Length: 332
Image 1: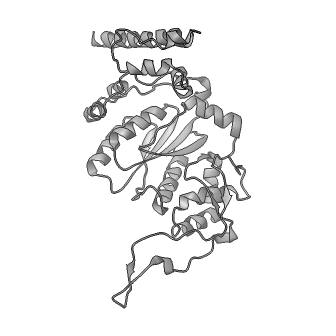
Image 2: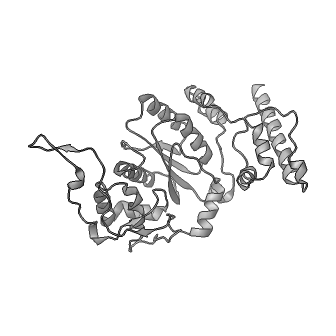
Image 3: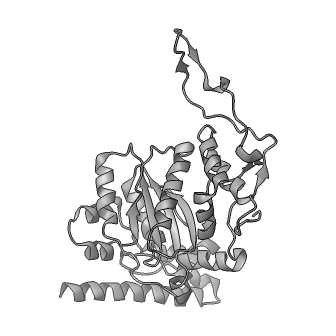
């Protein structure tokens, strides 16, 4: 009986949303679109359909009105679902996770995600729910300094999904730096050895949120990039010596004094590589990931990057310009 009531409530909410999309988006009269909906119950709407998401980003007037009676789950409600032990299917339904591919195109083009988490568990759940699709695969890296409660909760949560797993190695990850880069490489190794046949891998932080649907992302990748890496604009640095890692002064071994790491001599990039700069975010092909995990130049570049400030700003861009692989990209 409770299942019938839940189904009935979902049908009512869906019907209300469809009615508003029809009335407000289909009407040519702008004055009608500005009228307030009368006597509408506030409901948990789950994830929005693609049409409504597009309308929100295009600034159409009806979309905010529909959103007014769609109540997103409060953080406490999300955490309550995570504390309920043993029933993964009930949790997935309660948090409105997608349970099947929404189109043939999505079913046949799987994506991989690397997500770094160090705090705000509810935000991570919101992010995963927004990007989740059962045909995709997700590697979650938990900061090794995250509270034990967060680590335990994330582990219990991802255990409910066959396509979500915790990285086999953990790092203490700041927002940028060598350890962030190493954490992403660790996840790539895990993804390559997984059983999922993904095409592209992307990276996100637990406090971020997507503005495109899974279908829109796939369509953009397939039509605009066609097997190439997606990185922001590539800019050769004026000199090939990026700044060294910024860290506290270290005690001198023989004197009661401190020396700054800035005084250390920096080696030039390996293999006389030209160092490029970009954003730390990427969408990389599976073939290119295999290249950076096995090519000697990529391995030496990773080792060299450990002494570079924000190496994730240079590493992917520099390797993308190397000859000898079929995934060389172009500027965005």
